[in-house]
Image 1 (cartoon, rainbow, N blue to C red):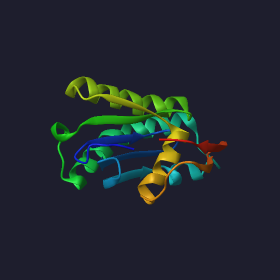
Image 2 (image 1 turned 45 degrees about the vertical axis):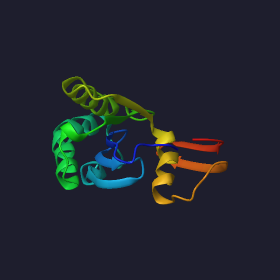
Image 3 (image 1 turned 90 degrees about the vertical axis):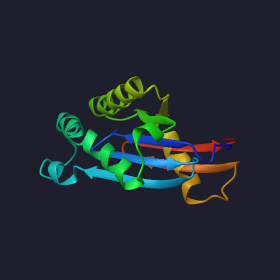
Amino acid sequence: MKTDPHQLILGIETSCDETAASIVEGGRHILSSVVASQIDIHAKFGGVVPEIASREHVNHMLPVIDRALRDANKALSELSGIAVTYGPGLVGALLVGVAAAKGLSHATGLPLIPVHHLEGHIASAYLADEALKPPFLCLIVSGGHATLAEVKDY
């Protein structure tokens, strides 16, 4: 995978009940990772309530993005793009993340990078192990989804 080593991407993830934002440099180096969990809110219901999850994402989205930028010591003006999970996941929750990413993209002129939730799980393996090279088999178990994928190339 060829990536500009100075490229800075803001990643946004809201597919279920955690609001997350991260700044990644050069496609591999995590400069910040901020997660606002809703686990305590949903525990009393015995599982995630989609409407509550969506509303909590609205409450946490901008503070999480702001903290990710602060923790990375970066400004929006330094970013190269904005990546966002577009699915699969809870529709309302995804809409919050996508709307935030689109708004920031429109306001800054930065490109919007759509990320498939399950493909994002595969890509995250590259962050953990720089020696990982295709081809390989990957088992993804995430929420209500499980996939066995053959990764042939980046």
